[in-house]
Image (tube, rainbow, N blue to C red):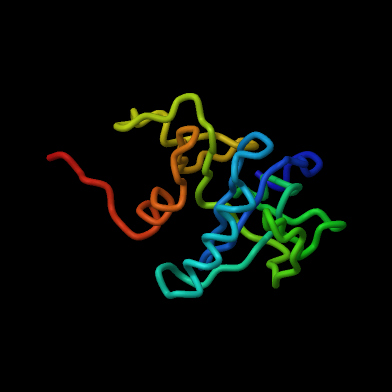
Length: 154
């Protein structure tokens, strides 16, 4: 499969961590920008691989040869909203392959999630997913997903 139809524009944020991006989705005011900045800060302390913003607020997604690729909206290149400070300028990646989707305020979030809720298909690409409950801090979940391995039952 080659590139898909035109790039879909979504209201989301994304951060490239190492070789892959975390795509952060959720309703307005759910904390997408905050989580993006928290991930960049976590990388600056060495908790996770180096990270940089892909985009905030509006992103373009495309299925390129079976891989979900995210790009920032041209009018928002390197811009991130920091609540209480306003819009800030950061270094950014112009393109990244998505490896993880975080859904904030997810109605199917659970203490012990079912396996099917930990996967999502976006633009025809299956990806790992973290559903985050409303009001629950997302950063610890994402850090755990990036730094630990799931328990395998024998």
